[in-house]
Image (cartoon, rainbow, N blue to C red):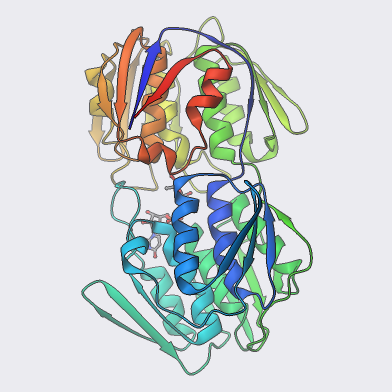
Length: 420
Ligand code: EPU
């Protein structure tokens, strides 16, 4: 499947944001911590969620759909603690399942997780934490087997604030014996949302959003689900629409988002000349007469999100002057710029982490392949800016994280269609 994009047109109208991919994947994993069925609303219909469902079903979780975005998950009969290697290898977030499985069964078997091709993605922080908590870890041919007598509460210091490691270790510690402390945890809104969900179900987790999280284990007792949880709006999808609006909108209203989660992006867009109206759960944006260049650096929340780095680089090809973008989270997340240069962008790679963009340039349409999810979305934006017809291949990558993106963009007057 591919996208055909006819670019060079502005957009106008309203666009809806779906539930957050990275919150949904972790809440789905958390279903394994419960003795009764859980209900989750606002789950996005995206390929990564489908893969996670397949993994959960394979473990023995029963999944029902109340409607297309409301899932009921019943883990009460699960006995299996071995992840399907085939599926888990396709999804980095599969490692999040190892956390609750280890907490529940004191053992788990999983493969080295897959995911985007955006650089080395080690799992040392996960393994180091589990070892401290009492697990014996063995590894053969990229398959990890962990076994513990019981999961004990310990003091863990993270070398860096990994998002999924924070969430996964919390999901192990929550069923453990005693108190676990995580120093230097991640503070992303998705982490806070997972903690809210667990605390609403009887867990005792303190310090979310600070530099120290404390988890009081249940001494092996599973959690009890009480009320439906609504997945938070996807701040990366909303941020992608904001950037698209800054490049192409005569007027764009972005609905169902949480502007508080996007202040890092809003502030920078305002600095470069974009006017944004901030509502309670919406944003309005218009393309300015002149976009200014700027320097940004990606960092952990509340810094500028690495997941918006690629669309932002595309935007900077339209800005007046020289911009520098410094990617600090991943080693291989700027490789896509070569393809933008083939579209007539003027981007110089200084080193694997830094690029300089000279703008503005008239982007040219072309045939292009999505290397990963976020660069794929950046290519959608670039081809929408470029006059003429482009084709984007490998759109599975885009479907991994954006729900029917072409339908959303068609509704605001953009010319993009899916070709089988
Ligand atoms: N890291 C290690 N060792 C570990 C864990 C992480 O060195 O044991 C490193 C990573 O290699 C990376 C840095 O720590 O250089 C930060 O990675 P983090 O662990 O925070 O990322 P993640 O949890 O694997 C999540 C999102 C990513 C998003 C990052 C950063 C999910 C499923 N994925 O990944 O989302 O880029 O946080 O915010 O939650 C995406 O949606 O396209 C995506 C890649």
